[in-house]
Length: 107
Image 1 (cartoon, rainbow, N blue to C red):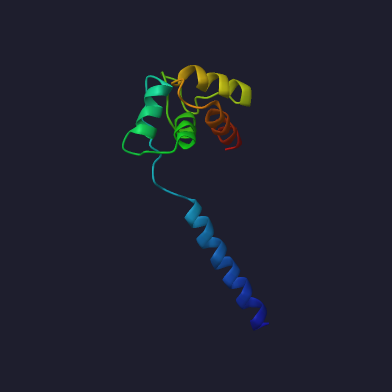
Image 2 (tube, rainbow, N blue to C red):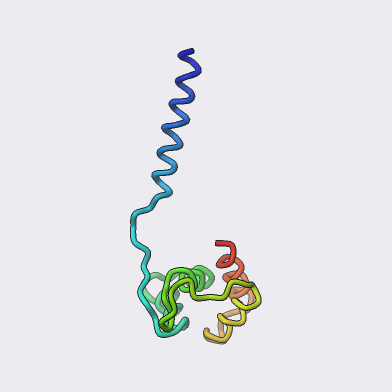
């Protein structure tokens, strides 16, 4: 019986550590922005230097934009792409916006 209890105890301890690691108590950076472009500029070109797609997803998910609570991007791929394309600099590739919206919708 001892050999059966030890693997269970190890599994439970492992599960507890895993769940504890998933429960991140750090607050989300949720500063409000007037525009999606301002948010993107801070996250991509500011001090964080996030990749293009990650900056877009971060802004859509975590930040109030123009007084709207986060998440601020639409819930369908087409609507998200259209929203982000209209709000951001034209130099951002459509492929990056499309990929960012795909990630945003899946999260």
